[in-house]
Every structure is written in C-alpha cells, then in structure tokens.
Length: 273
Figure 1 (cartoon, one colour):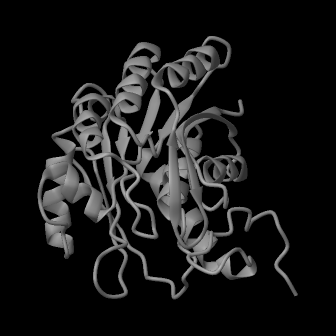
Figure 2 (tube, rainbow, N blue to C red):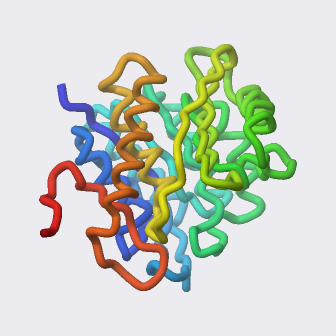
C-alpha cells in the first residue's frame, strides 16, 4: 500500500525548502504527499525577506479536515514560526496520534534568517518533542534545544544525542537523528540514537553551494520511508543516501544565485548531456 504522508511546514516560493521540497521528496520516494500550511514566506536562494503567519485556528482546521478523511501514515513537521501555531499543531497531533512523527526543529534558514520566534522554542520543546517519534536537529538547533553550545566533534555529538533522547517520550520507539553537517572538516557524520543504540552514519562533504533545504529534504525522506521500511536504521540510511545523491546531482539545476536547491528527482529525470 502506498503510504500517505503529511508535511506541516512553511512555504518557500523558490521551491528549495519547506512544503514544496517536502512534497517533491515524498513523491520521489514512493509516498503520496499532503500538506498543511503553517507559515508563508517571501524568500529565494539568497534571503528571506518576509514571513506571514497563518492563524492558528486555520492551521487547526486544515489538520482536522485532512485527518477526518485521509489515512495519514507519517507526519513531518518543519517551519511553524509562531508559539501559538506550535501549540495548535501539538494539540491536534496529540489527538490524531499519527504512527510516525518526524520533527525537524526549523529555526534558521540557510541564509541565516530566523524562522522561529524565541518564545516558540519553549513551546516546541514542551509540547511537540514528547510527541515526536524521530527528532532531526542540526548541531546549532540541538544546542538551542539543550541550552548549550553546538557540538564540534563526534564525541560531543554522542553526548548531545543522549541528552536530546531524554527530551522525548519513553513510550514506544523514539529516535534522535543528529545531523553533523556543521562539523568542521570534510566529514559529515550523523548520529542515530534510540536511547540504547548509538549508530554513526558516515559521510563526506560535497563541494557545492546548493544546500538550500537539505534539512527539509532529509526529514521528509524519513517520513516517506518510515511507513515503508520496518527497520528504522535502514530507513535512516536510505534517507541519507537519497539526500547525498540529491546534493551531488544539484549542479544539474540552475535555480537562483545563492544557495540553490538539491535535485530531488535525480532518480527520475535524465542527466543533462
């Protein structure tokens, strides 16, 4: 059965990040994508020039209307922007109880622009983290969630993953996917931890400016694969492999003058001559 997946996030008009990137990823990986819009942005590959929030009441209406009709097998949460929207999403997902909930705590865009209100960080940590079945922060985001400095080596990443795992609910299978893309050097090691197993996912940095929306893409890939792959570490490895190839093939696209998007459809579109 083809899984139905849901992204609750913001809209990036350039298509490299947010809901548009999520839907591309889910489609490429064999899932039917649906979306609830939590925020609107004016942005391109160089900057975010404006953010327009969506009223929490309308976010609730979108979620409830969708779940009342469509079987949702996995949810990915991205940019929520505001405290009240974050609280509304947490309340409705606690009611609907999706089997897989991938939380990407989007706080800062690739351009450096802030995408989450400071007051919303506490709401996210208190309301959404206990619901997540997988948390996918990068190192700066993990530092904000823990109130500490970002890790700068693998040993510190392991300790950080343990602390993040303790923020999640202990009922059922819960995982932290701590992304190491901000580590110094050419290695991009990620850590996957469930409170017991500590799995390193090795990688090498790819020399390209086209990294816009990589976090969105990874979390959407996990949401697409978790209902299809029984083993979580295998789903994580496949999601990372998909992203790595999407980054490596990003040069096939010509989108914008800043941090361009990855090639979400690398397995489907022919390579240019």
